[in-house]
Image 1 (cartoon, each protein chain N blue to C red):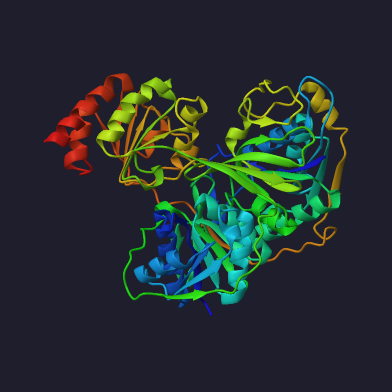
Image 2 (cartoon, rainbow over the protein chains, first blue to last red):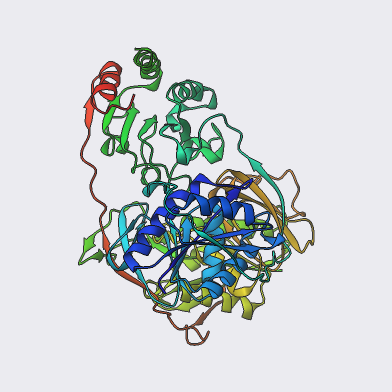
Length: 324
Length: 272
């Protein structure tokens, strides 16, 4: 058996769109291995979610479900138990999904319980299912092979296109109930970031500001540009650490990894850690007063100048371009 | 209370990489402590100490898997304020994450610690999986990517704010437990232990070693094990086939004005 099992996540019964790149990566591994694509739904009552995914197809043959109240809200402890039980029941060769904060939390724990290898943040699938992942802030790519009865992966969401619904409907199969314990933890609260803008990791356009913006008030002009382009607002670590904008806007090795169609970096010098989070973007624009700034080495279009001078002009010109 | 902090040395992340023979040549690299491990030690010290007093609420032990002769980073963390060290004498570059996790779990068991604190990832390997694995191996609860950690006086649980994709999750975990820390855990009021004054503000970042700390560090105890002593063999189930430089981005162009920029975005890149 060389099947690939993808762990899916839902929000109010709807498949999270963040799962879709992970499905694409899993399908590529399944094709390289000559195996089938299977899904796993862990929930208190997974039937409705599983039926919806099964009818959407996505190239999967079976949607496995496991019901246990301990699966909601998400905890790495209970989910790892559920994943281990599902692996023992269905014997996949590979288990994984998108590198979301939940799966990055639960999958390594499950891998340890099965004494299995895990390849993190996969960016490409090669021959014989060798998986490529970036190391050292994206300055090198490591090709990793895994042996053993089962191995795990997480896929970097920005590197695989979202899987598309279609094809034959998958079968739904309920797995026998298994013990799953939260180990005494309680999820007290999840404080969701409120924003009218698209999520950073899914936006087509990202406009980011750096240390050179000096204070939060100055981000207003960037927000205006962001909204004009229908994008998401981002920031460098220097800007979030200085408290100019909330921490969850940080783009970089230690923040969000983004790969939009258009990335506009304003007053960001371009430290390696920031570049690691955005250099997969299709078109990169950099505006910086320092012509030596490393950001210009990855930019498709570089403009040397102070943001105070250039941003108002850019705003007007973009407005005109949008109107015309 | 006993806290075990895992630490690692990495090649200086500001040095450029030398690619050779399908791998990276680190032979002339300068080695520095992993930044996230500095945050982990800082977190443990803030949980352990009573600011402004010599009282301690916990013993802080730093642990590293590294060649015995190359443990300057361990000495550095002892100088920061950890009480003692444990070194597993092995070339960590030859061990996979399965083996490293087992070594950590075994030391945690033998030392009967109440808490394992780790950085969320190492800046070189970027695996982001060791603390989660250790949680699984020990069958303990875990709180990963912690931005804030609170403990009430003498409590056998921690309240942790974790950075998740759509915001912040607040999770209460009973001890013993495993914690992995994100960088915002070293902001001035991110860690509290219920004894240090609630309005105490730490200096941002991981503390520097004091001169006295550096002198004391040389006298602190460092226990050395081999993987065999701890009953751990390398699993061999993760193999590195090659390490290559990423494909270079085609070089871009400088534009002279905002007008030229917007015009090119519209007509050339076609993104507006």
